[in-house]
Image 1: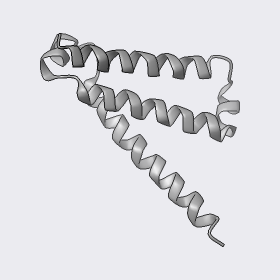
Image 2 (image 1 turned 120 degrees about the vertical axis):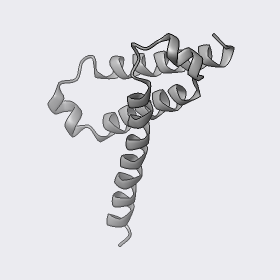
Image 3 (image 1 turned 135 degrees about the vertical axis):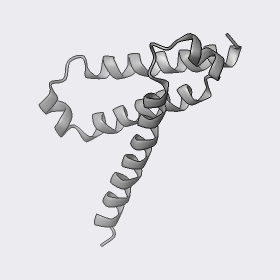
Image 4 (image 1 turned 45 degrees about the vertical axis):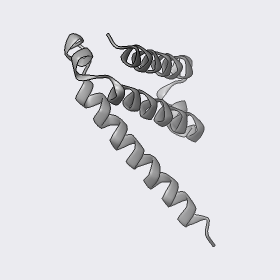
Length: 95
């Protein structure tokens, strides 16, 4: 496994652990009303997707149990959502 793939997969693991630790004590209702927690989670999803995108094809093939395409796609959707939420907030505060 190339060094870059190891580093990328470590980034994925660290971000996933951060996400799990942040949600460990929160109920769904608490999470849904905590905008900071939601932004944090979006950030971790983006980090995981960016890192997954850096993993070479050979390594991805060696780990078929990881949903590589879905992980990268989730990053793209999360980045879009993040932008839309930010744009909405900026628009609403411009006056």
